[in-house]
Image (cartoon, rainbow, N blue to C red; front, top):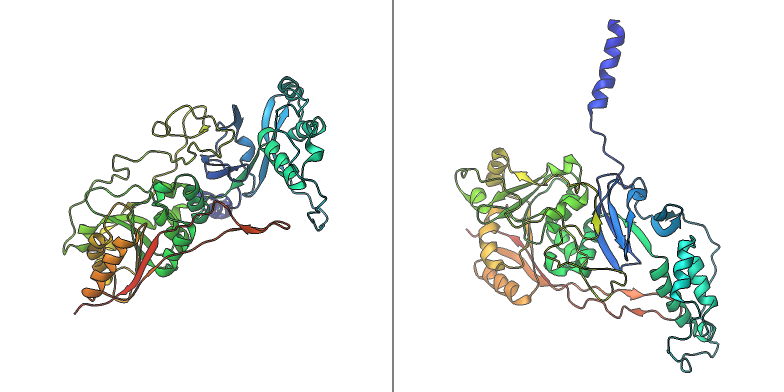
Length: 447
């Protein structure tokens, strides 16, 4: 009996260890980014058995998404119990070269009088009630169109894409990480992240030399995007300390979307500038993450012209959860970021931080830089982001005059996306032409 008990003890100890889900799969309670119709709508949601997602005027359960790998594509289908989201399994197709053939057709003789479609709205609704799939409805629309065969090939492709978005919408399950979160916010609501484009974000991480086992000091006033991106790169090593002026830290609720493990969350701390720079440990401050102004959930799906099937009936300020609701209560992730321990604060006072990243859209860069730069160790790099050039130019001039840093430079990132299609490759027509500026340098001793 004693021998069997000794064997059972290690098993119980192993069972007590937390089992984290596979980060490649969407698990219950994790955050996901739902991409509807190839970027027409981008919605953050937290998966649960009772979560409901609204497409058009119908609600769909997000339960089929639980357990699916990130990158899966779902399509709206109709069954006996109504419409639901069904995963589209990838099918291997034989590779074939597609060439656009000029056959002499054009759209000059087509007249848009809304009489080219013989299929009525009542007949389409009847097909839906009978359980017809989206592809079947699209095929019926093509068969009953008087002008589809007369259209140019590119016009036919646009027609099919338009009908697919309306009658067979698709939802792409994306994993929230630094790039996808930044791209989603920059596309729908860039003001919440200080208009930081993804190339500017990557430049900040590179200029600040964020690597494993680094102690990174951040001034994050863009909702937690910088804090989450740094913690993601550290991977549970080192520390990312969010510093601030005043008595309460800045809101970093965006970190919840990264689905960090407890090991990574433990490395996210905060401490005020006065506490880090004072000779003695300042009195403990209130551990108030929200600062009295933060919402429990973040949504980015604002009303816009590209939202073809969105129904917005309330103002953006009154909406806490956007198009994703639960039957009982919204699941919330644990609040990231705890108060830095006294031992860590004393260590940083003695040794300094290894790098600094600042992104404070509503603050003067020089006013903050002169307070936080002394917290860095000598030869430590720093990177400061701002939407406009002049505040960074003033900060750069003051740093040079005070001989506080070397290798000081201002960089304007540039990103251009191209549409690559047969016989029609060109830059995107509505690409962003501005991505802010980044001031970088290396701190030196002034004595």
